[in-house]
Image (cartoon, rainbow, N blue to C red; front, side):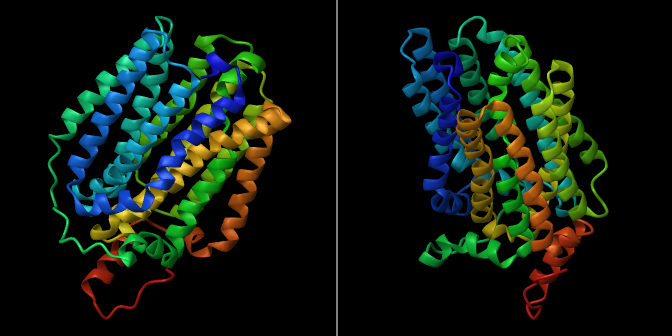
Length: 386
């Protein structure tokens, strides 16, 4: 997109095009994840993503693909991911024992970050052969992923499905509103990452600030994924046992500080190191939040709650790209990034005051124990605080 338009506004609009389908389909995708085979839903979405990537590859090969076509493609991808993401999140607790869920989420995050490392590096190299080559590679990999999804074995099948009613459509939202720690965790991600979306501006930083070429952009995209991968591997081997809430808030503050420092850097090496710290801090927050959401949510509702969670994640990522593109066009790339990083820190400090239960969360195992008590003791009142 940036090669075609040289516009940060266009980069932001691409993020917005991915977000709108997630917003429009949110109430539907949660029901689908809770009422149908989650493995099948994931496979269908991956086939749809493969077809979309193939169409973009063909369009690039014949010179048909223009910015409008890219918007349509990313919107289609956004719609597929709207269904795929909550189904994937809700599927994980059914694959392992519940006390292993935090480690499973960390390993899942590690796999995603490995793909994030290999993807930009390979994409940068393949792009030199033409845009159709990385698009075609994506199509092939999505097709392979669909085949692998069909082989997933679920250890614990979900319980019976409740009928679709007006109340059930909004039950995921209502459940999150009733659980202050879950509400605090996912809303923190929404606002902090929305403001601190520096990675959306990496093409502009590579070309106009750091004065490097496509290889430099590839390294910049690689850096946060490397940091995130290392952090996720550490968390998979050594799950957070104490002061989980405090560590999550600290990680988001480090995320904001790294964003500000990156904006001020004029060295490619320093910028890469700062992006690595940013990625590592982000993954700590991701693992704590995702573990908390899955462990505190009954399986019959995990699809709907995960759908709302995915909307928050999509909002922070895609709207964050939009926000970064717009503010960069208003104030310039560097001031926009500094403002975003400072905003992330401010939001974190406010959330620490608004959600003291989340700040005081000692261990993720508390969520597992409390959820087990709630499910086995019908006389136990709904838990509001720890």
